[in-house]
Amino acid sequence: MTGSLPIATVIGLNAHRIRTDCGATLVEVAALANRDGARWNSSMVSRIERGRFDATIPTVLLIADALDVISRRAGRPPVRITDLLASDAPMQVATNDAEAYRVEVTVEAADLIRFLGGQTEAVEALVFSGALDQSRIAGTDHEQRLAKSLGIPVRVLQHLAGQLWGQTFGEERDARAGEDANAQKRGRVTRELKQEIVEAYEGQHGNHQ
View: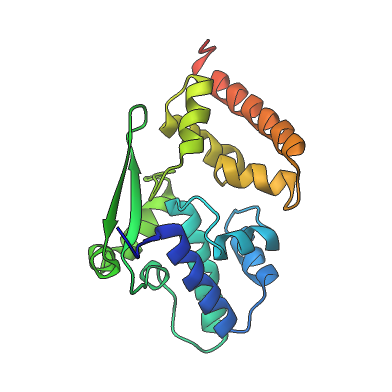
C-alpha cells in the first residue's frame, strides 16, 4: 500500500519527537530503560528512533515507560503506547506463525489505537508479570532463518532471547557488536549468541539435535 509505514518507523518517529520535545538525551532514555531490565546504550535508543529495531511488545513497553518518566519530569502529559502509534499514514503490521509463514497487513493508525485503547495498562501488567512473556507485535525474517538453522520454533527463540538478555536476538547482537561493526565481527557475535541460545535450550529441554 502506497504511503504506508512500517510500525517500527512510526514508533521511532514518535519516540524521537517526544524525547526531543522534552529536551532529553539518548543516554537518559537508555538509563531509564535499563532500570526496567533492558541493556541499552545511546546507540540502541538511536536505532529505535530510526525504526531499526524489532517492534516486540517488551521493547515498545520499555521505550514507552522511559519516555513516560521523561515527559512527566518535564511537566508534560504521560506517555502511553498509543502515543507511539500516532500516525497520519497507515502502518504495516507483520504477524508470524512460528514455523510456517509471515503475513503483513496494513492498518490505519486510528484503528490500531482504537484496538489498544482502554487496554494498555492491562497489557502492560501482563507483559511485566510474564504472562505474555515475549509475545510480539512483529517478527523478522532474520528470526525465521535463525530459528530454522537452530531447529527450534521462532517463539522458542524469542522466549529464550528474552530470558537470556531481556531483548531480542538482533538487539543483543547489535549491542555487543557495536554500531560500526563490520560483517566479520557481526558474524562472530551472531555465532556466540547462537551458542548461548543452544545451551539455554538444551538446559531446559535436553539435546534437540
